Image (cartoon, rainbow, N blue to C red; front, side, top):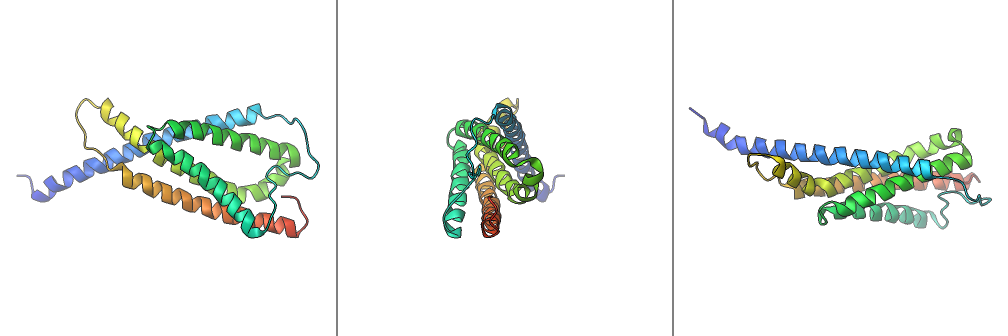
Amino acid sequence: MTTPTATAASPVFLLRGELRGSIGWAAALVGVLAVTGVAVGVNSFHVVESTPGGGVFALTGSTTEVFLTILGRNLGAGLLLFSGYATFGTTTVLGLLFISSWVGSGSAAIAAETGLAEVDPWVLTYLPFEFAGLLGIAVGGLLPISSMVRRSARDSPSPRAPVTRSALLLLAAGSLSILVGAVLETALIHHHVNQGIRP
């Protein structure tokens, strides 16, 4: 005899399993695209011209202006990655390849300009937050197409996972991570400026 509780809970467990699988597929694809983009960016970078006193990510203005510039730039990139939710993942894939290759070439530029020994202490304080936030948002952008592909690949019908809520949660979490990274990056730039050091 099947209890009502077990019968009622069964679809819930199926939905959760389907959602976890879709997120896993999307995260795996995001990881592959990000690594590919970074590798392409690093390998394609070459120093054409060095401008004296011009840092790779040099920003000017007040602390508030610098913060808003950093936050706006990164949130704009995040929204581009999330737009794949409405474009069957196309803009997420293209945007992630472009952004990750930019990160790769930018990292190579910093390394070439200042040396790795000078880069690690300050870049690693904020870059993980910003990049992880972008990757999380990209997973949200790919979630609908990931769920659709998984459903179509099954021989038997599976419950439709409620991806919208999960995608929005990934967008919110990624945006929060980007915000933290922007605060840290602004604080470090402000510190470097006060110390007379080029960021």
